[in-house]
Image (spheres, rainbow, N blue to C red):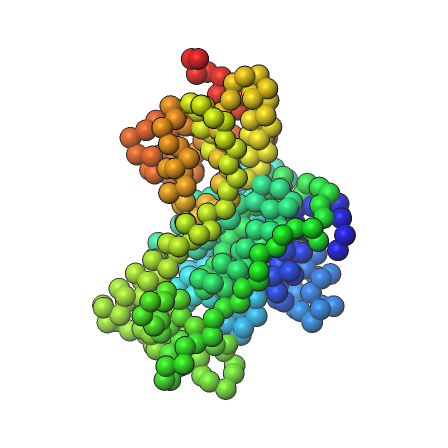
Length: 375
């Protein structure tokens, strides 16, 4: 593929294909439908499957089944569709089923405004399942990110056997940019590990020193047990408290490495600056513009653009915040991720710039907040 003028949704589809995805199921919903359309063009000619479920719940279920059979699978939806899938998401987390879920966010709540963007699903992506365990959430800024973070998303899903969310946004998804996909330095494609050869196959057995069980697809010569209920290493339902706690502790702890090894971000440093702006998603584009404008005016601030949102990259945030006097968080909602920054930087004042009226946060709005400091 040479240089192309494509939108974020199309880049996600190309990223999925480059990752080895061969199964997509979804249900049409604005502004995610063009991912479905693109997968319909890309997958069948390459021996893959793309189908429409009767709703988002069924589509997610199809993807879970395909993943359990050994295929790399992806679905895409927006907030209203995602809200239907809480039980399926819980199943994928608890039963360690690799899956990529694209959430092209639009203004909510409920059906909200189908053609207006927002980042109002950020907390739902973390907490929208029973049991309180997490998947991984990556947030692209532009079309290039849509391609590359989708590859990273599939790699993380395979590596940690969990659902990975791509937290896109209507503005990123439907904005076209010229990019040369062939020129990107791509991450090496990862596939899930096979079981360790230590006696009979136990679907959730994890040897000492490991965090993620090996994988065998269902439908092969060796029987594979799978359940959505609490289970032990053998996959059978259990009420044994020690087995339950061991498994749930492992599910929580296995993602700890993500916050250190896969804390994707961009950092624009202004030396001797006393202010740090933290943001993500589409707002990062306005923030970057503001960063260079302010620098030219002699009013510099540092900018941290987060691309891994969950698990929270606590060490990264604390390190970049350092000893700066002012910390500002800008996001297209009423204050969702700022809570995490406040938690990480406990005791320090964190200012907030939010917007949730279907319009973008502008560079001028960011500059206005930053310029309030007495210099």
